[in-house]
Length: 249
Ligand SMILES: Nc1ncnc2c1ncn2[C@@H]1O[C@H](COP(=O)(O)OP(=O)(O)OP(=O)(O)O)[C@@H](O)[C@H]1O
Image (cartoon, rainbow, N blue to C red; front, top):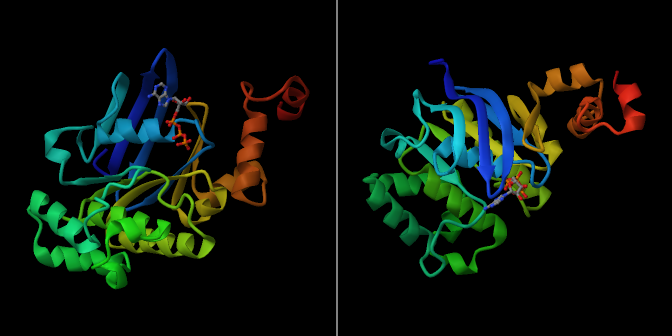
């Protein structure tokens, strides 16, 4: 288990009156870039919240870097970027990062490092309020990179970005993984899947597949990740319609 940054076993989560994760089990190897893919409402955010230890009513096992999810010891070792901007609009990018660096007791030099790695040099002295969507996502990411966390949990960091910015961000994720950081990145854009080491496909609170991109195409016979996802849905007895059960059997 020490080779895993995240180990989960039979996670169940209730939100409101309904169970939204139904016994989810998967592992994220250390230093890997893993994509958590699934349509809107499939439970990606809930699963990430369970992993970073901010979700209530979680049962099952969630171990992060060898500790129970949410343990105080993990506070500086795990970076979490939600779908909402986590930087202050009335401060510049650099002022935000200086502020978060002081909370984390990170070196000031770390601020320059994260500005450079997120390619925000040109916007460092710009108010966050005036950043574009892509720059705002990168500013939140820069804040999460302070202190060099071992694990980054990123909830739909590329949502709303144009294809060029998406490619840039995925290149950054790859560089971080090559530097030894583990990344769990959620997305509902299946194309992005091909950039991951492993893919976890989630649908209605259940894992449909936990595979390498190549393995996923091989086991479904599909030409791309989107086709693979559709094939898996058709094969799943719960999701297959009466006319599809035959096809799936
Ligand atoms: N605060 C809440 N109270 C009750 N149910 C909730 C709450 N937040 C989310 N849910 C439900 O939990 C399920 C999973 O939601 P979740 O946000 O985890 O999905 P998601 O895959 O991240 O979706 P998206 O891609 O749209 O962000 C959905 O059915 C959603 O309606």
